Length: 231
Image (cartoon, rainbow, N blue to C red; front, side, top):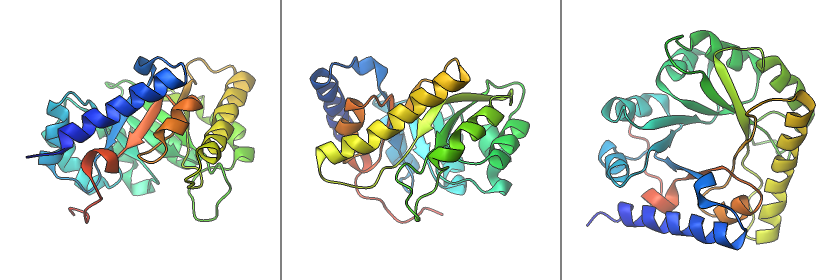
């Protein structure tokens, strides 16, 4: 028996429980099933259970799934190489991980005019970790301001992966920093629609919801432990 649809139901229950506890409307939380390294069959089983948003990190692998499930909404998550921007701009609806203007400009230029603007989340290195990708908080204002003039991008908000912690209050502190930063940028630039926070994964989604997450990126809790890359 395939456990994945049941896992999806459990994650949805966790989201609803967290929303009740922290006085959030569960409909304000968008669930992204992070399906990297998982088979097309596994992804299809989640799609058939009503899940519409999927996240991928590896472009060649993702192409197989995008082709198989064109009705799903595809999110590219993670660092982007310059030579991958055309395919991402053409095949994905959202990008979580823009951290420099060069990549943003390439995504804008490659986004077909026939499609809606590409939804962009700026990745922030919220704890200034040397091993983490993302723009520094100090440089974020200038990056977002520059990208606000790119017509084929829709600037949605911020994304981050805070330093791991098993302590709930420490988890909340990292997410709180991102939420305050988003509010500050939005106020300074008067950006309409810059309201979204992509934060929270399998081990900390409750803390993320407590601090205002609007998108949570869940992989292991839905699909199980990560498998080797398909390609």
